[in-house]
Length: 144
Ligand code: SME
Image 1 (tube, rainbow, N blue to C red):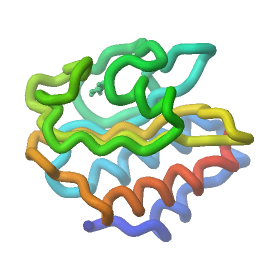
Image 2 (tube, rainbow, N blue to C red):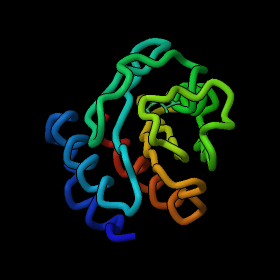
Image 3 (cartoon, helix red, strand yellow):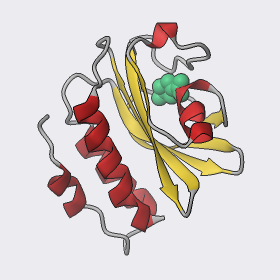
Image 4 (cartoon, helix red, strand yellow):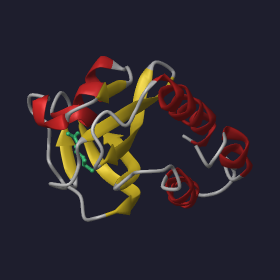
């Protein structure tokens, strides 16, 4: 992995506007090898709406429990999908995506957003990426 958690932490500043911080974090996340999308969905009520990201156009609203993002929102846990074609209900924003990791950002036991990272490579995400993206989510809690 070309980026480390210290680099990410160095650009996380809770005194800055949230959208600015998330925009720069999405840019750093996108430096991970073999990705076609990296960004955020943010919670409003029972839905997620598209936040700052790097990649192709994406769907703007995802309902709780729908797709990988909505499932991570509902379950309050990280989801790794090695093959999105086999994930029932996967929302295909890009037909190039083959695997995906979604990590919820949780503040006071409530999901406030998710980090969504997609790859055109099958089985791209493992424990190393899970640990890293969960650290990013943790570091972002103070910004919400
Ligand atoms: N694949 C996601 C939707 C978001 S896009 O990939 C950016 C999902 O099923 O939640």
